[in-house]
Amino acid sequence: MAAKETALIVGVGPAVGASLARLFAGEGMTVALSARKADTIEPLAKEIGGKAHACDATKEDDVAALFEKVDKDLGTPDLVIYNAGTFSIMSVLETEADHFEDSWKINCLGGFLVGRAAAAAMKERGSGTIIFTGATASLRGGARFHNLAVGKFGLRALAQSMARELGPENIHVAHVIVDGVIDTERGRSMIPDAGPDGLLAPDAIAANYLSIHRQQRSAWTHEIDVRPWAERF
Image (tube, rainbow, N blue to C red):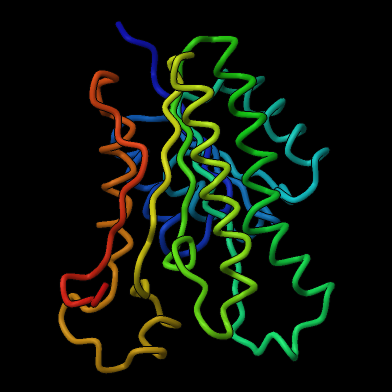
C-alpha cells in the first residue's frame, strides 16, 4: 500500500489557501497549514483533519522550525506550496522604504526561504513538488502596483532558476500566475459588476495546483496562467 502523501501550504488565507487545503485533504493527503498566526487557521485545520502552524515566512528561523516540525510529525512533504503574498495600491511617490521592503520580503524572500527548505528536504528523498503562487504583476508592473510587481517578478525568477536546477533531481518546481481578481469579498468590492464567472473561483484555481502535482515527469509543466474567461490579456 502506498504511503499517504503529505502537503504543506505556507500562506493560508480564506481564498486560495483554504481551497488548496480542502482539495488536498479530500484527495487523501495529510495537510499542514501555515500562517503568521496559527489561531487564524485553526478552524480550517480542524475541519480537514490537518495541523496549523505559526510561521513568519520572511524569517529564516521560523521557516527552519516549521520544516523541522512538519518533518517530525509527517515526514518530508510531497508537495509544498508558497502562497503568501501582499499588495497595496499606492503611488511610488507615497511609498516608504520600509513598506517597500516588507512587501518584497513577503512576495519574494519568503518564497526563497520556503523553497530552499523544501528543496533540501526533497533532494535528500529524491522527489517532490514545489509550487509558487504568482500574479498578473509577475509579468508586468502596473501603475501603483510596484510593491507587488517587484516581489512577484523576483519570485518568478526564483521559480525558473529552481526548476532548471532541481528538475534533474526529480523535484518538480512550478509557478502559477493568477491573472485576475479572486472571488472574495474584497474582490467583489473591487469589481462589483464582474458578472457570472468574471472573478477567479478559488476552488477552480486550486484544481490546477493538484493537476501540476499529479503530472508524469515526462511532461512536466513549469508555468501556467489562470484567468476568468472574460478577462482581457
